[in-house]
Amino acid sequence: MRNWRIGLGGLLLLAPLAQAADGPATFDAQVRLRMESRDNRDFNRAADDQRTHFMSRLRLGTTYQAGDGWSFRALLQDSRSWDPVTKVPANEAQVEVQELYAQYKSPQLGVTFGRLPLLYGKERLIGTFEWSNVGRRFDGFKVSWNHGPGQLDFFLTELGGSPATFAQNGEFAGFYGTWPKLAGGQTEGYLLWNHDQSAALKNFLTIGGRREAKFGRYRYEVEAAGQVGDVHAYAATVELGRQLGPVGLTAGYALASGDSTPGVGSTKTFQNLFPTNHRHYGMMDYQGWRNIHNVYGKANWQAGKLFNLEGQFHAFWLANSRDFWYGAGGAPNATTGAAAYRDPTGAAGSEVGQEIDLVVTANPLPWLQLQGGYGHFFSGGFINAVNATNGLTASDSDFIYFSLQGKY
Ligand SMILES: [Ca+2]
Ligand SMILES: [Ca+2]
Image (tube, rainbow, N blue to C red; front, side, top):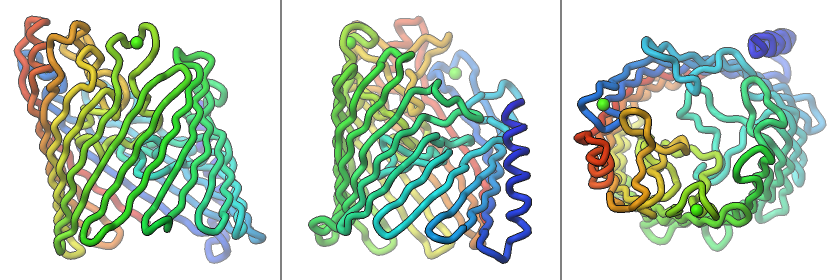
């Protein structure tokens, strides 16, 4: 019930601002409806786990420019899951505050505090997880220092729950430097600290960097990170792209370390932190940046302003065949009966499978976006062998969605 009260409080806050609509306040709104249908998440045809459900999300926001560099931002969100079987809690938070912060900005200094979004790089480690119906936000503050060639941020936050679970999610702090024009490309460096006294991994640091630049007709992107403290792990990504008129082509490889004894002794499985994995490791969300080798190719065709067509191919292997197969949400994928996909002996091998995706986006009006997607996952040797161990026959999985998004 608390989230309803906070939502109501937010609405009362919006009311006087609405009267000043022609003043220093601006308003924004977003409606998103999505139908998803997923078949065979457990990769076992004998158990019917086909599910179709609808999700809705409504956002109403306002930004108030108070002068002298100060501004205030409030964003209310209503997220719902219309699931005929069982609601997935992660898809519904009803009415709550998505953003509520005060910001001060001068040419050299920016300070933001309250409930705010954090988004860096390509969101491999820190993102707002827009694909999700609820999204992600942080409670705390961020200080940005603009020193000319780049910007250095420091933030001290905590993952924002519904409506607020301060001091329950552990601290997430870090320095994040961004240099947009260093040697002809964008360069980033970061030092991140996760601290949670109540978690198995109480303290660890993530140190890494990212760079993307163009050379001739090509572009490249590299990102690498290492983790020390209660985790000893690493991850890296290399991507090469080329634009041929309206067609963009990308080939890439992502790697993240695994652990032959997860949960025992030292932790060598890379911690994915707070990512938006949906855009990276296949839109079916069967893979996170943990314990993987992922080779991929993407092709994108922008047909005028109206249509965009994107195709993806991914091949996945486990980096360590004795560790779990981790999904996009961070947790291991599960077989029929909820047992996690893992072979502690490693005999099931490392070939997880391959995925093909097709996404069509149409923008018939400036404020309206329609999108449809289809994905197919071919179960590989690892999935087949784990199922065989459980007396099951493995088969492929399918995913289809259609979404409508309106923005003001
Ligand atoms: Ca099934
Ligand atoms: Ca271990």
